[in-house]
Image (tube, rainbow, N blue to C red; front, side):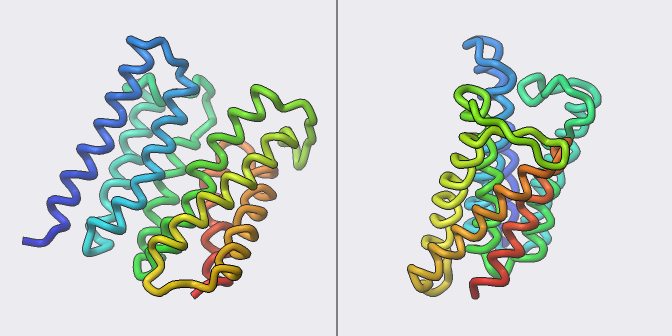
Length: 221
């Protein structure tokens, strides 16, 4: 039997387990919806590692993120999972991110290190940058109508660089040149900072993975 079927089961078990944990944290531990939404966002992004390690075929691997698009859409319009809600209509980031996930699975399946690395700036960098920006951000700047903090952008760059570097090192089919790999991760992180700064309404969940993937494909084998 193909390992794709067990991988599908594990994927859905993982997703619903993360949703359950987030909802439990919200209801019984008093964590804010903002925290639980970021928890789910990071958990979904980190499943990129599980995707490339467990699935054999992209036609199966693409199913969980597409299903999560539907789950997020239902939650957005029907309020099914409070732990994912932003409370702001028009903010569709929770729907856009799994769309990016699915597209990158389809396009970069033969290059798993680039697939996973392309998702890491949005998975870790954006989530943690928002926390830093909200808590300690003092120096504000506005680009194309979007206001960000300098502190948040610095964190976005540093976390994106580190998070991008990890899958490039761990998942590359052959060892990559260390300097080229570190440089590619830095260019990717810088692109993420620029694109995130000018992307309104949650579309950074589309634009950041897209620019990250483009940078990595152009720089690395």
